[in-house]
Every structure is written in structure tokens, then in C-alpha cells.
Image (cartoon, rainbow, N blue to C red; front, side, top):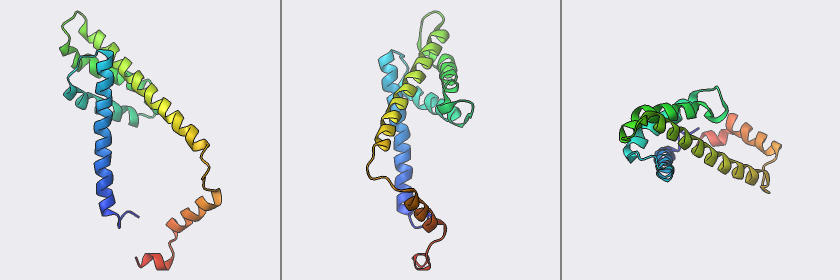
Length: 147
């Protein structure tokens, strides 16, 4: 299906990588707002690990709970070196959990806005149109295979 879209695949890969960079930068901005006091480079290490593991763990919807435990553990263990206060690991663990909750609430709210827009969209495809499109993909016309 994607064989004829090599340029598109390259663009999609670049945009996907850019999306990850923007996601980590958003974590950094939220961390700065929360006063987490961790250098930006550490976000590029800790955040992807926590997001990937929570995404592949099927225990909770959207990784809720799992992500908070991961952020708390990773930030508590590795980012606490930047604090010079007693019990820095516990403080940083709490900050990591707060960061994860803030991010998940942020993405959940935007998803709900998108859901409302999807439900109120006027140019919806009918079930018949979707079935016809699926049929075209599964069983292309002979004239389409020549291209």
C-alpha cells in the first residue's frame, strides 16, 4: 500500500521524530513551570523511556498509573542528583509524578476537545462509503494495479 509513497514515508518519519522532540520540549516546559530543576538533556533521556514503557503496558487505559510510577521512579532515581536537599529522591519522585499527571491531563483534555469536534463534524462518511473504501483497498480494480 505504501510502496508508491517513498517521499511520503520519509516526510512522515521526519514529522514523527519532530513530534517526539516537541513532546519532550513540552515536558521540559511543564517541568520548568513546576520547578523541577532538571537540565533539558535529562528530559530527552527520561521522558521517552517512561512514555514507551507506559504505552506498551496494557494494564491501564492510556498508561494511567503505570506512567506515574515510571516517572516517579526515573526522576527520583536519576534526576535527584540535581537537588542538594535532604531526601532529594523522594522530592524528585513526587515532582516526576506531578509532571506525568499534568501531561496526561493536558493530553486528555485536548483529546476530549478533538472528540467533540469529531462528533459535531458535518462532513462524516457514511458506513457504506467506508465499506466501499475498504473494498477498494482490499480488492483494487485491475486498472489501479497497472499504476
